Length: 422
Image 1 (cartoon, rainbow, N blue to C red):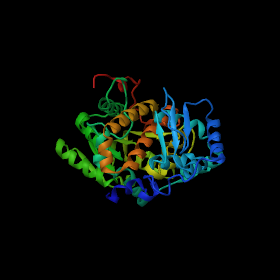
Image 2: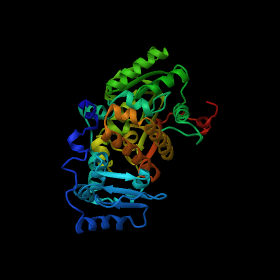
Image 3: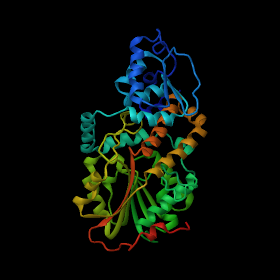
Image 4: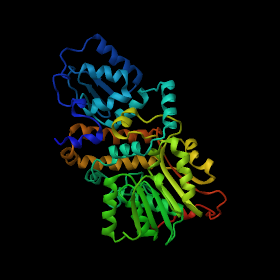
């Protein structure tokens, strides 16, 4: 295998121990302590569809919504008990924990089991609130997650705009392509974009939204991004669409944005900024807006401060922190920016993730050929766990519309946002 394929996940092959090698092959039968540890887990689960089997227990087929979680070696059992939020992901990815039945059911139950240590969670959340990653750290974090392979993301994201952010299901029967188009219209209506207006975008992904604004609203867009692979993809896409004169893709950090624009937009970037940089970002937002400019920040968030799941932080999204609305106000309040509208569309993100996971599974053999089995399992777990987090309200999705204080170019009602026919 090409080892470079493993590097974005940040886990050497030896860390996974995926194969049933000598180290992970059980050399003894489960003892009384093993059984006692399992009883501690099941007692906290209470009435639950989850059944736990140890390495030498007979195989059974789950019934109805019952889920069988098999722990394949004694070391995996101890790791699971000591720190389930951190270790479950690696153990599942490595095949040292197997799941038969609906993985989403198991993860929903896991939220009931993993009652957080409040003192530790408070300290970790505070450390994340104070975090202010510099440019080099930001580049490392973005490279880890986004520069895996454009081909990988194209397998399971929408096929029209390649949006790796929450879609907007104006109608629940929409396809993922239709819902992502609806999301982009939803944002553009909130921003009241008009032909000929200028837009600066902080964190542009593969370029789909910048091109959408130019093509559908006649905007002129500058889009900043530090992902080399995404920028290259976006520039080539602009040429194919004949929009290279309307959209400029800048391979640079948001901190280096210059110019004044009619609109500022950031879709799915705030999670990577670090709350210690919010005031600085707010200053840049204010500086970039024309007197009647408008802006919108679209971000995963939380109801209460808490760190990201430690396994996701370690393996999938290093350095990410989903802020509360109160924490997001550090963007606006110190910088004389007025909040015009706040919308929470978290269930739309759960539905978006369901569509992504379905498409991921449809293309799982292609993913396996690009990477390996631990990668396949890790990303299945990440997508499924994210569905559970949004359904249970552990994560939110905030859209915050803002402008300079005193700007009166404000719609009298929200009717413009919900115009149909796009």
